[in-house]
Length: 90
Image 1 (tube, rainbow, N blue to C red):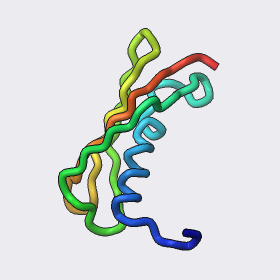
Image 2: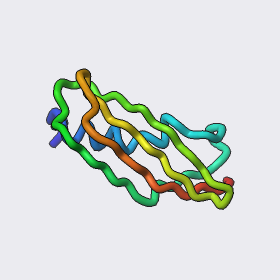
Image 3: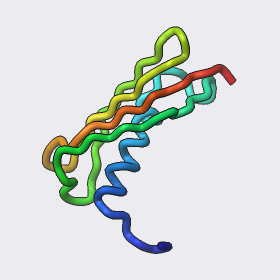
Image 4: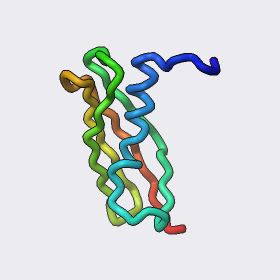
């Protein structure tokens, strides 16, 4: 609903979906990235308002890649997200 504050789960899932965007290996605007799939595993509840991402993207020579993201709140790691990527030239 408009104006509603996102839940802790909504915030951490949105952050997990941002891993590829903050860790790309290629210059912006050059390739087209399709996030074909997102898997998120959480082993703790998010505490507080902050979500920290530690992301790394790897792209193979065949245009298939993986963005892996460690997810943290302000105290500790809470989970991980993995995005399967399809990368093509524009």
